[in-house]
Image 1 (cartoon, rainbow, N blue to C red):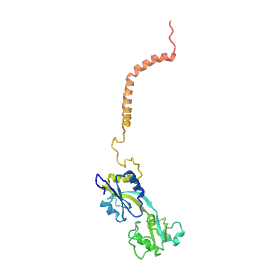
Image 2 (spheres, rainbow, N blue to C red; image 1 turned 135 degrees about the horizontal axis):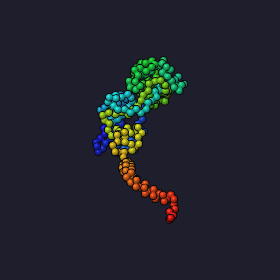
Image 3 (tube, rainbow, N blue to C red; image 1 turned 45 degrees about the vertical axis):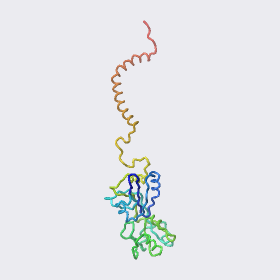
Image 4 (spheres, one colour; image 1 turned 30 degrees about the vertical axis):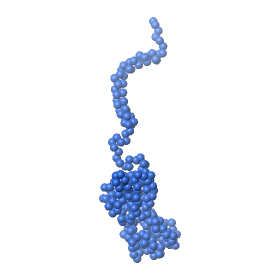
Length: 260
């Protein structure tokens, strides 16, 4: 995916709800020589897309298979319940799962919250996608739990959402195949971690990489100068002190001796 050595490219996959624009903007500023291509994928597609090299890295939802992929957690989302605007839930600023225990709750096949069955009464079917589940909520036949970004992505004027304080949450991470940690992947890691443009990108520096000529000279001078200077002073110190004592006596009195 990174093109040829002469014309490298970088492909970044991302799942629904993730907004990669901030990081892409920084990439374009720092690496204008390497075009970045965005590919939107579903959460279920992410492992195969990365494993098969159809993207260099991806903004995905955890968990990932840590025996294959490296991952850097970026943030954790609030889980919300999507409801019709006239639902009784809208009277509160936030709710708990117990508050919704008697409600019909849809569990789409592309659910990213990871539970076997959401609390509440199961819906009459499992919608294929979150979008399909949103349509059912709009029809007034049930509710839906999703990360807040997905509620915003599938926003409708006749629906709203409220935070669910004790529901499972979804975390987003930058992930890539561990065996494919290229220099371009390292560049993108630096961007999501907020490293500066002059950063070493987390690589171990060469043994003398952080020693400038001036610093090396100061370090060498400190050792050799101190040692040779000390030895020289020790060798000549006796004569020097004797000479100073004679001349020092004259300086202390400041007066010529009287002739007898």
